[in-house]
Image (cartoon, rainbow, N blue to C red):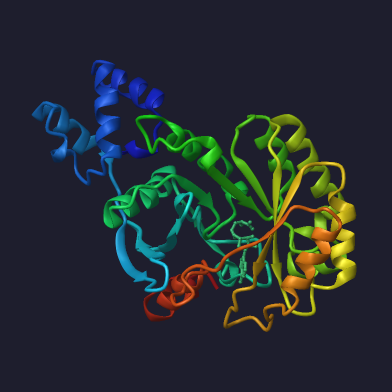
Length: 349
Ligand code: SAH
């Protein structure tokens, strides 16, 4: 069986040709897929035979809404999706002045092990498919009725650890007959896989690369982000510099403010020195408390911001949306797992 929605238009065209169908059918089918049909029967301008053929040879795996939480404060909507195999992932619709943004997941769980993150506590179960990534955006659009102008890959999972899928997703998201979102309206967030950052730079895409830095010194960063142990901050920032040189895109650095861990003046000063020489943007994130973690939100966000600004660093503080719902990624899935996902985890030991 063929996962038809994970194919690019070119691949679909080639595949249909193999099936003895004319090329123009590809665009017709592609467009139907992005209108959010959940069965081939809905593709009413195709012949009965072709619909039957697709039914027999292709899969369509639309996700089900397992849970939905709407913030009364700001209209943020958090979705927990049940995928075709019963696994769950989360996405969030956020309403900003500059347009609606959907934050999507790219893996079921995560294997990066960051100390502050709810998504990684039970490890990675599997990668998502391109179709499963596309569907999060598409079905949020259909369910909420809200137009979507921006996508951020900042949900569950590490995008650069599912590289080929994410690349294909970007093609599908960007295609005029696909999700039709401009590359400059897409952000990809990574914990900092250096080789893959270089690989991504090679494609010269105009998306925004967000790097989860969270500490400027190796001792702290290795403590809260195991991925740092093998690479180190210096090599990571060199890769970010190469990324900027290749793409011309300013790199954005995420920095979750953790009480007594990464919020001191000397760390602000070191961060400034480390970022010198290439355009950068620092986004300070008030830490979302995770039940299973002892880490607490910093009380020095404003002071840290001021210190950075004093050194001429471009810095913003992320506005907290959906404060009245479980809007930080990974938490809704963990709660749902406690109710009905346990067995699947036990199996993995
Ligand atoms: N794996 C990718 C993307 C997923 S996480 C990455 O590491 O960037 C998206 C962002 O949320 C990352 O910057 C991550 O470090 C941050 N994050 C995770 N848990 C958080 C928490 N409890 N509070 C604040 N930010 C958190």
